[in-house]
Image 1 (cartoon, rainbow, N blue to C red):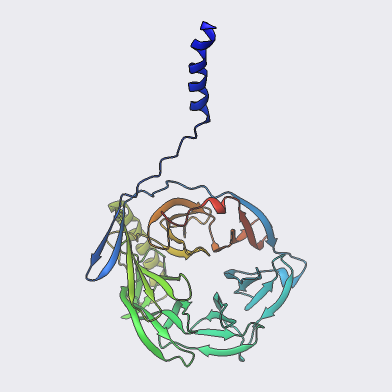
Image 2: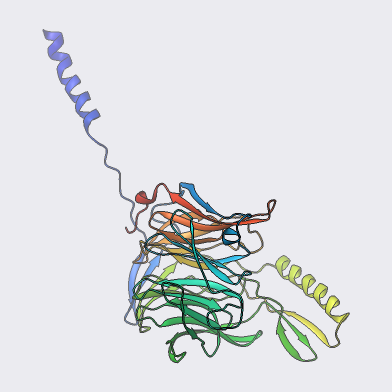
Length: 396
């Protein structure tokens, strides 16, 4: 009996310790929120609140076949997904938009080759206005509008060339336009209505090609490299959008009228252009100059290198209004995944992760991307299920 009395308290203590759940300590956000000139600024530290995130992806749909022209692509450049899961793929070189249901079955074609209303020359980006049922497709200097059945509605033609665009909640568009010379250019974010009238400018920044050519005094761009400091814009929802000038890690959230709601900043060191990188570009300039001088007189090639590379290269949002900021340059290495910082809708830096290169849409637990099989000479639109979607936080 004495032995039992001695062991009983130890047993109870041991059992109680095992049964008690250990509470996971919530990480502490180490940034700060300030109000500067009447605007809230969310200042994030360099490290994400929840660390690195590994997306668990499982492919569950692949669209692309060589034996049926409706499933055969040539340079897919834009993808959109509606609320029913239907998939819209901009088949640029075939000058059309192909529409498939959520199981990958072909439904219809929008547009096509030609010069008439609704015909495409060089379609690129597509966005859907679920409220009004319209479909918007950028096509060179125009943004073409179709109804939900794919019938042509109107051409929107901004005064300057639209390099990108998003849809505002009232059906107007916010167009990223460029103008000026390659060495002295301007990029703007302008609101445009269906009549192509400019309703206001939200942002304005310099945009200069890294490389440009002079032939007998005439200036022309040598090709956009993707390393220029650039204005990037993405829609968050029908009422708000986000834009940033990639020279600094500084993002602006505005409403449909251009009112600045708050800013997002992140402590991120600049990647300075090194002497060896400068030397590489000088060698490229010399090579291009040599080739052009064999054809033309008075040729000069310039490389207008900035002090540092861009802080980010692309912006994306998902159906939970999280913000994805691509921080690595993949233009010269398309096999490398996009490295992205994930922010909450309120601007808090949550995760660092990788997403597949050419990710076009992240919506309702799925990720949509395009893929080229070089060996087969085939191009595909793919959908992946994000198996840990419900475990990804949307706030702090």
